[in-house]
Image (cartoon, rainbow, N blue to C red; front, side, top):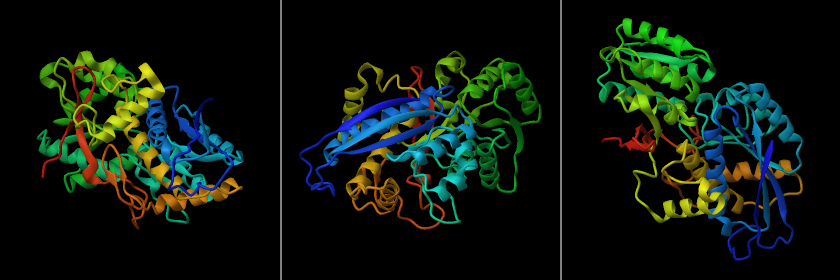
Length: 402
């Protein structure tokens, strides 16, 4: 467990509810993420969120944030232990989630019953934000699998002319939620499904892919993370070139050191696309918002931040935009002596943001005020695009048409 202290002592702000408060408020932010196996995504989220606090520091007054790295290693039980520790901490304000969906799907009832305020900038599993048995404490600004599967299947059919896709899915609640969405997107022409476990290596991956190709599939729709993704990519590249099929992937592969491990195969012409939110530093114009984000990141992280070499850039982008929404919510509340009351105020403020927030992906107008199925989703279907790697490892967005 590591802590990153982020101090904000500001004197010029005129709009915050804290104007008349003399005391400094101390809060802990718990980052429940996989710092062991998917460090790139965890680090990108951290940099994005803290850069948002840096860029908007004139909107907060007399606040001290302690950013605590909690490494769950992809284990749902370790994540639950972090939640329990959070609840015992009198200064713990909220939990910032990481890449993996299973911890938040499995522990969803505990999170909401116990009032663990959870902000999600990566984990995409559909059920995470859908809690129908009481107060919902989970807010997401990320890809949402109830929509992602439709965009991925649409791309496979329309852009890759894939008439017989084969679903290659991680055998977890995340993979299973994607199967439901993707099969629904396919309509009556259901796809065959192959499930794989974590730690699948290249030898096993080759056997799996040969079976898929022999079944008549003309593309592989992949849902998995960077570790297994690199082995399936290597395995496809080492199959005879005339037998190779395009891989159309969920964005889980971008959460680690995937590109550096696969660039030799991609440079040989292997077709690989993946879903992202519709922003990249390469493709989007250098607006004032973009410049402010980059300046803030470089102020905090110096030579460790570079838009061209940033790994898991979606983690930074989503962490940054979610940080901006958090800052706006904080300007609308006055902290209470009891941390549970401050969390509740913050939850209500997130549901009732009273000003537009200009982020990297878009301008957010009351993103969590909608009722119904998508009430706690900041991004919608139109915010999801497909993407590809450039030769230098940066990500290029394929803009949606129409």
